[in-house]
Length: 396
Length: 145
Image (tube, rainbow over all chains, first blue to last red; front, top):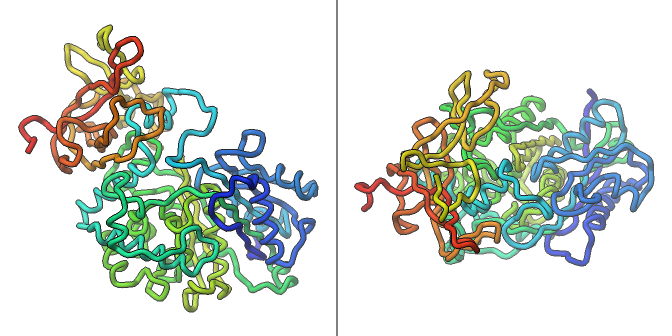
């Protein structure tokens, strides 16, 4: 398996774009990535799409073949990957494999999503199915996505004494980072007082502590070392790339299930913890080597719990790290220098690709306004509905 | 069994025997892991796809966590009348942690660690005048503050 490099990255800003079809968002993002790399559409040897949930592809979600048929009928091989909100990360993994295996010299991963307003509903046209957990959680108890994170957030308050103020401080950090990110949807700073004054959605979580839903698109182009050198792009290697699914005994009650079977000692959020461990092992690195992490902050709870889950600090220690500035851009472990989901709103399947774009900008020193000093190793971690996890490690 | 004046919101997730309600789940025939709702097979890799047989669960447990939903969920959730309500996770003695609406106390009054008891309560009354029942957990009577 040969080494894989980042040739180009690009994204469409996050927001609401009811007039822009999903395929057009995807074309915009991939076009931006191609320009970033100094490539044209016809240089692509393969294309992977993070398949969206809500539109596109004749009802099957955004498909790479659909994008090519509308912009560049190259005849190249494509792959359409599922995995819910982890699909973007899974798409990067699949693209890296296309390069590493020798199948392609240059290949891209793209994701685009247009989200319905409000609580994420079941996909349009799905039937009432009592064997489908995603039907049961609605019809039997109305369990929205925020409730799942709220249950974890309250449990953490019970187990570690996390306070409402600390949760609010996590939101403040995410929004402060986004001031320096022109792609973010929400770019205004906020204070702890403002966060605590925002309405409770699912107690103890408040509106400013939960990510919105947005439209967005992002793309990553990968290639061989010789392609990277030929193009003269900064050398950023995909040092680790891994996906995983849930492990038996995981105590997390994952969306959209209505139960779990905890086994003592089993890892929480195992689908992500396992993917991250595999990616770091592949890169030959440990948590202490990572200079920044882009993680899936659907709520402020993840900003505290995920660094612990990923092995960056001991259980319960994240509160101290946050309140002592260690998650800041110039701290020990910068978390979501992009501003995170809290500043972008989640465009499900595109989000994992945006994470990798941010890692690349950071490692190239191009993250103007939110640059982590001396960033050499960046890691992404993302979770998808149905126990999907993905993690990408980039190294400059 | 639900009377002619009441029906379950979904079939097969709970029943009533001798007047006592219980959740209906499954138990692995090999390792003994319990699941809710029922399922055909155990997902413990050590069991190599062994079958799981139906079993009644609870009706008591311990509250692991809770939250109050302040905004009305989308229409697939038919609660009428609607008001903010509590949802929680309850640890059953069989080792399965189940999600359920909470009842029997004001929404903000639940406490992690409280002993809880299963109840069947109506979400709404349907067009034919029948109560549509779902499962909920309430604090065991002597532990309500």
